[in-house]
Length: 154
Image 1 (cartoon, rainbow, N blue to C red):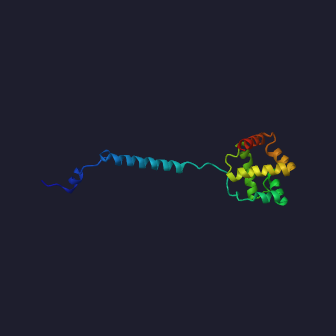
Image 2 (cartoon, rainbow, N blue to C red):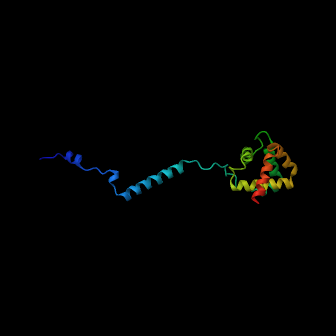
Image 3 (cartoon, helix red, strand yellow):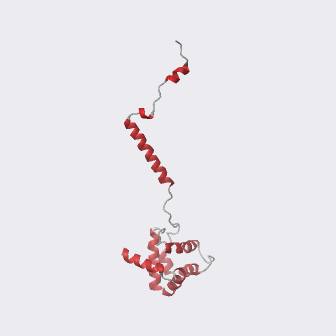
C-alpha cells in the first residue's frame, strides 16, 4: 500500500491540552493567570495625584521673602492668572479640589507643605491668611476639618 506524504500528516496524533501532564496544565494555568493580572495592573490607571513638578519649590524661601510671598499671594487672590507664575497657576487651580477632597490627590510634600504654609500664615501673616480664607473657605468648612484632621494625626 502506498501512502501519500499528506496522509501521514493527517494521521499524526494531535496532542490536546488535556493530554499534557497535569503539572504542565497547572503551570500553564498559573502563567495565564499571572499574565492576566499583570495586564490588568498595567491597564489600571495609577492613583490620580496632583503634579509633583513643583514639589521642589523652597517653601521657606517663599515664606521668608516678602517679594516672593506677595507674588504668590497676588496670584492666589486675583480673579485671573495674569500675575501667576507656572507653579502659582498650578497651585491656584488645585486649591479648590484639594480643599473639598481633604488633599487626597496631594503628594506627601504637598500635604506637609500645606500644613507648614497654613501654620506660618496664621501665626505670622493673619491679615493675608484671612484674605485667602475669605476667598477659598469663607464658611470655615475646610479649615475646621483640616484642624480636626491635624489633631487626630498628632
